Length: 335
Image 1 (cartoon, rainbow, N blue to C red):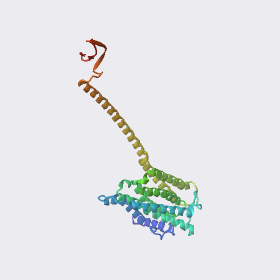
Image 2 (cartoon, rainbow, N blue to C red):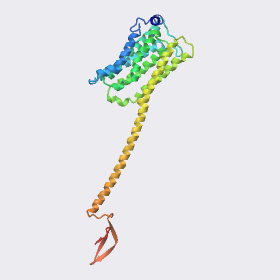
Image 3 (cartoon, rainbow, N blue to C red):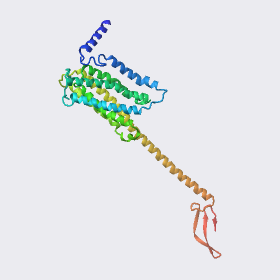
Image 4 (cartoon, rainbow, N blue to C red):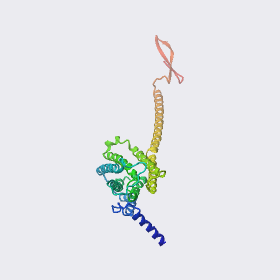
């Protein structure tokens, strides 16, 4: 047993010391995966257990102004990361077909490596999305998809920065930062208040955009399984399978939030229409019955209506006068 533990430790040290990119070893949180893993696990525990428990007997915080500034910061930060991805490779120098990692210390290679690290660090900043839900007691927004997506990304990106900061897999960062520009722009507008709500009809298309992103990442990553490219196949699978996982998670969320919701809404509207139609028919029947009852009541009070009396078509002379004769349905007659 001790020998197995020793072999595992030696393999781990060889991986960290000899297989990783030496340029990033001294950067913050890059020397070991354990601090990042601990932060991710703490985030998941706080999001689903500790945070809601602490807020259970407290009033929700009003964070509208804080959220406006936070979302504005995220838009600017994501725009900068997107620009860095373009400037350090994807704006023309990188190949979408096959792009090996440049491990040199050239200015462009180091710029890409630093951009990858900042992208990694941005995943911790995005934990604030969940913190705001907790403090505002929006626990229904803290879905399994939300926690998995935010909780797994720092650990996933850590491996990319540690072993391949740049190259083929950084295409995911390019797409993701663009999606975040659009997403946090939406959140910024939503935080401005109810007056903006009529203009936010495009919310569901954000989820569609994220699914398109994952499909593109899958195609881009898995193409290297069929061509020769000097890029680690392990990261092809790592990035590709992450895209597959997130695609199906987001598709399920889309179906639950929009497709099935629309179906439930249509069913509810049909039931409500049928209910209103039934009430309308019942009201008409009640009005008809009420009119019949009023007619019978007036007849009983001595009023002369064609429904109770029948008028004769002849006249009878009496002392030179002509009188109309009414024949009572009940058997008598009046002069």
